[in-house]
Length: 360
Image (cartoon, rainbow, N blue to C red; front, top):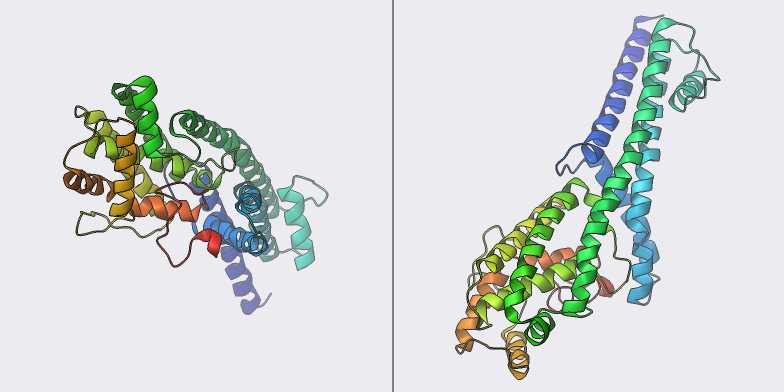
């Protein structure tokens, strides 16, 4: 064997090992690491899937049709990951088997495939190829096991999220509205009972902050019913808390403050994971919000018509509401557009870019 061929084989062995190592690192970051890790390989897989789904979305003519298409995006994106990982491991070991003396690329590929899928129809007769065979078989089993154990964790988090979203429909209507929520609590429960809502949703926001960054595909999992969405539910609760703190004439409840803070921190963390731009420390009036004064006045009048006790100074109520809303305004509207949420007041019914997603 010439020096050039020996060098080429050594380089290919290192490249193959790097490919396998990078694939394993991506799988560990995606499935094992208990924090948000935006790995390049996983990102590429979902971007390719999104481009393919974009072709189908152009043919859709209604929200329900687009929702039914996008309902498959996250599941199929997840199912695409193991084949991509296995293909990369197969390619990396093919290069390594050829580098350590396989007779041809075809023989190296056959040995790699036999090892990865534990078929055993192409045995290794020398020590180094045998070591590679055993390691590749172990890696194949580990990748499949990681994926299988990952799914129950994801669906448990999905179930927790959707239970709260479903319960909100009774309290805030469909699509969820902060104004409807306050009206119903005033009429049925009494506004003092909102304290329990703020506590429940503070915990909910903490849960989605962890789950929707460490299990990022969850953000794309759509609710069982097309008119529901986790992001529009989050917006309704945050706006209700902001109205309670600024506009509704009730004793100050610190739990509402905590709910809003937990909400905008969670949404900002999710937006950061998806690399969505947003102001880090927005202040009103230096930073405008997407809610207009006319919309706020209409909400104020509607609450007044339902005999909800309101702050007398409407101008100050508007400034206070805008001061709370500015903390989550951009991330709320941007995330609603990103995941193609159904239309809901004060969240997915407006835009931050040039077009709403359903007009694209």
